[in-house]
Image (cartoon, rainbow, N blue to C red; front, side, top):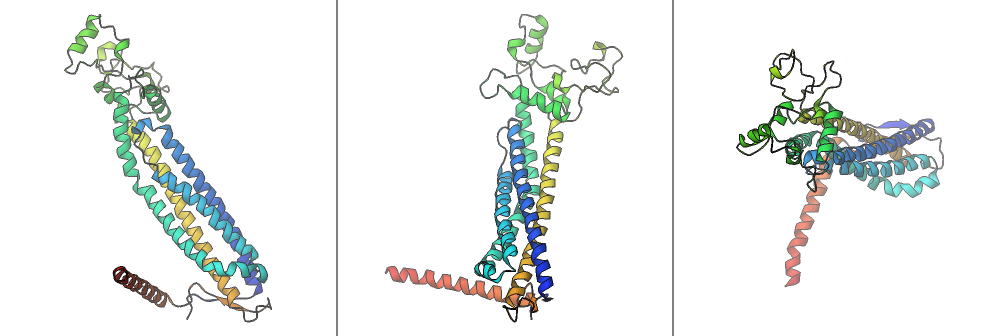
Amino acid sequence: MPFMPVKFNLQKRVKLAQGLWMLYWFSVIAGILIFSLGIFFKIELRKRSEMMDNNESHLVPNLLILVGLLACGLNAFGGKVCHDSLDPIKFSKWKPMLKTYLLLCCGFNVLLVLVSLLCFLMQFSVYLTLAEGLSYAIRFYKDTDTPGRCFMKRTLDMTQIEFHCCGNNNFRDWFEVQWISNRYLDMSNDVVKDRVLSNVEGKYLMDSVPFSCCNPGSPRPCIQHHLTNNSAHYDYDHRTEELNIWTRGCLEALFSYYSSLMSSIGVFVLFAIILESVDMAGLKYLSTALETMAEPENPECESEGWLLEKGVKETFSDLLTKLKTFGRTNQVEGGDAPEANT
């Protein structure tokens, strides 16, 4: 007995074909959006590649671009089939392809599920890449004359301004690195010389942050130097006063941005999966309703459509039997091959 059978007359078949045609073109638009999101995500990764030490993975955006293109092609084909379904002559040329097409759609849905899962699972990889890349970016901030790092300062400054963040985990990360190049230090100055000599690694460390850490919304002029020295500023206590620099770390800010972007894309891909599943179910009903017409030359006659020709249990049993038969056939062929060689 067929699974979920539905009776159809001409009016129902026409409405189903028209509704499916619209749904398939909605799916094409969804495919275009997935493709566009893949391009956008790839650009966003490229823009901040230096912040990730050029180790970012483009697996997710590349897959989004691929499935977006596949969605456009598959759904445009499905829309054409639905458009031609009520014309027996036109539908006859598509009929032999429908089984293969539906199998391709099943495989495509599996790929969409994989892409959606990767959008959520790869967020941890992005976090680790950002954590390592930002620590390198802060360390090489001063190397504006070094090939390959010339734009590191500009990129990090623009990132801190855009995302309202400072340092890797917080602004104190700048206290642990020398972020001013030696070419801008007066080594003849005793204060500078003493500070360099007092450091084991010979670095010029200070309790200061770059200008890009300043919060322009603060009513007080930016205090970016001697942040922990209360006597260096009037009416100032760094332990109690709200600093007029960004206190949020760039790791948290960037990860929040990328994770929200990836989660949004993953949810949209899940919506596309539901849409694709509805399209497949509708096309299955339409094709079986057209195949079971008692009098194909009489469009007014009734017919019956279904999702599965047999029940769910019988369908899975048949599928397992076919897989076992296929596996045995391969074993037999593999066993006969050495004998043929001898």
